[in-house]
Image 1 (cartoon, rainbow, N blue to C red):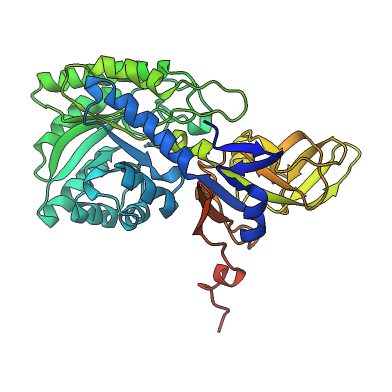
Image 2: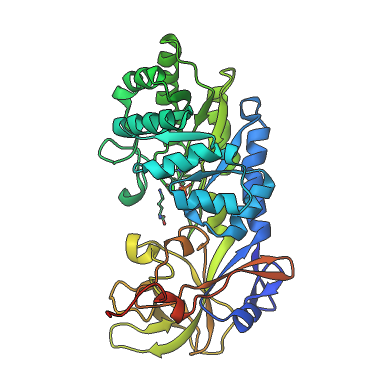
Length: 418
Ligand SMILES: Cc1ncc(COP(=O)(O)O)c(C=O)c1O
Ligand SMILES: N[C@@H](CCCC[NH3+])C(=O)O
């Protein structure tokens, strides 16, 4: 099923014309499809349920991909857990109705305050990424009279074959503890009074289009699980991380079941609960960024379509040279021409796409597709630009899940010198 499709030539989100969303909420606006989110979550739930090793598995949505409360509350209602990387994300998921017992806490720089709060609310597990972090977690837990549930994030030194900025499972990356050190570290963790060893974790990168690095990483992690068992350290869960890619242009990422089933087969009979941390795959193709053309600026070398969204709204093109499809919302009568789609920000890197064939005039709407993941959540107020509104379409209904910021709000926390 397609959740963004044309009716009489006009692009719709479910049953709602994007032109009517622009008229009602203005632009730029992020538009999410509830049905698309539910379908994406359902693929993970069903793939887990289809295999005995996946029974009781937990999908912990990686909040960083899109942390809007509308999306978090939807996933919470569907039974999801959450993978968080900050105290801020913890408060968000709690505000959205998450069960603390389904929250895992990743990230290399957890502060004492973040650890204390997470212990206080009773999260499911800390994914610990270094020796000093382990010692700090132990000290905080002892001080609070608690035991911190722990898994070590192991860096399996596997090439995820993705963009170098979003590859996380190689030795040179800052993430996780070195594979060779993990056994000694688990021994140490097991001896600490404030720590309860519960699991093992591994996340090797993002936008993976090939399932083989997941299998390679799992083989290494399972070898470690066996060594741990031999050392008397029994684990309750295994967290396979996130990272499954989506289609932006013509990529062919594996179906969720095709990526997961071989991993579950490797886990059969081990009695380990499976935790997953997908982000992009759950939300990426469930959202688009709706923007309006302000000006067309023909040039000798290039034509520019200057739109009202910019790199502050969607920084993936500027940051990774990432491709997002950009399409007309309604068919135009203008002649087709090739355009660079750029924003109003004073940076040459402020572009959303280059060399796009479009038949457009000023005032036309464009949809930047596959923008549900790492879109709004990475946006900023650069150039004192209010961040975009966000809406969730549900059938023929549209819910405003984040209103547009006002300019006054952008400097409300600042003061002129007295
Ligand atoms: C620890 C951890 N888990 C999960 C994710 C989610 O990744 P993705 O959005 O690629 O599924 C990330 C981001 O790469 C991460 O760092
Ligand atoms: N922000 C990145 C992904 C990073 C994943 C976070 N660990 C992107 O837009 O593709």
